[in-house]
Image (cartoon, rainbow, N blue to C red; front, side, top):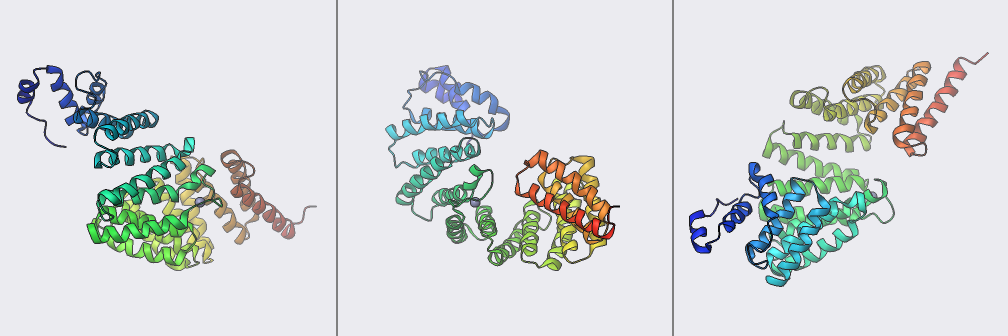
Length: 387
Ligand SMILES: [Zn+2]
């Protein structure tokens, strides 16, 4: 943020002390300690400045961003962005870069409310409109245009949030992947391959391909991304480790379990050092490692790792997380494969009970565990028939 304007000159020029308060408030909008104060002072009546004065318009836009970023009051932020757009359209025109910035930020605000109120269609329409105008006004390679295009792809990719995370026929992941690919390429040309925005688009592309089950393409993207991220941020950075974890996941989805094991083990080790042994991220990698071992038939080793994860999970977090219940389900699978049917049954019953509570009786994962329990009981009765 720019330094505050010289207060004395403003006071002299305007002759009104309230203007000083207003200008300081506007200048301090992203300056931490003054956030709350600035937000409060924004509420001053518009009579201080002409409501159509450019500073007033900036003030309204900034106030909306304070509501969004600092207070997470999205409905209020939406109303404020709409007011800012109306004024900016009237004063600056519908194609002015500031008007388009307000519209871009409105679309972002609509999208974040999406999972609660189903505003993603509105967000999509708004991003499409802003993108078209930014292409006309700023050009298709301008960083702001690329940001709108990236965000539009994000809306397309998260369309299924509205359906409790389940993919539906109307999902738009293929279009999202295409868009992320185009933005990643343009950002590489304009900003450089290791720029955080370029890497963000590449990461979303790899993720969209993963949702589309194009695992080989996704793997290729994650491999390039991991290399770039490591060069840009180092091998211990949280983003680098997240990308490597995702790479391990797509390796496992393709049945490349030995490679997945190596990758999960490396990420687990680094996450233990960087985030601690009991962080959720560390536990996720640890569980992935156990899965990779189990899938290769290294059952005893897998059992030991599952039990270690679950002990930490129980101690620090409890079992109301879907990944933790997947881990318990997979332990039961491994115990069954080891022929430890009584232990497998106990683990499976507990997992089923928790999945019914957390996910509901008809959730696909719950049904999966119920089917596992049935098959364990069958095996148990075969080896040890009831009297
Ligand atoms: Zn979907």
